Length: 195
Image (tube, rainbow, N blue to C red; front, side):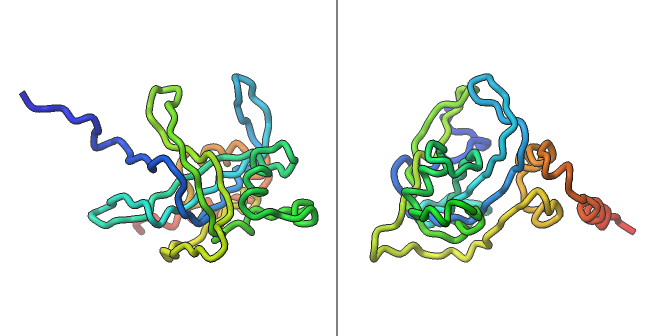
């Protein structure tokens, strides 16, 4: 009988546990929409932040590529907010910077990303971001040349094609997306016609 391996071709390689050098490559504003936490759904503005980890690679089409990991945050700089705690240990913003904080200012910023493993509700092993901190003085993080990307639901056509399916679904539920002029997206969708 053939042996059975533990990992199937459809499984994703987990980012290893530990602290890894990283760089913020994507800020996706998911807008204000329904978010469920502990079986309670509320309207919240959320952000999805993605980091690239140059020293951790995965093979894609025969080429080693830097691994990526992301985390979703409630868009708040309140001292009790998780995003604020990450910002404090990562970029140590001043009170003035926090008053009108622009999440896109994080794009390209170097950091150390602490990764842990957990089991989700489906019983699948996943990797998650447990913390982000500043890079020690004198340490540099190699650039991979990855294009930085930001998305704002009030400007729905800009970078829409670069979003993941789950991000698009969540954004389409947001107040900002519903209020925005989406004519540019409709035009882009029809330009692929064969005639």
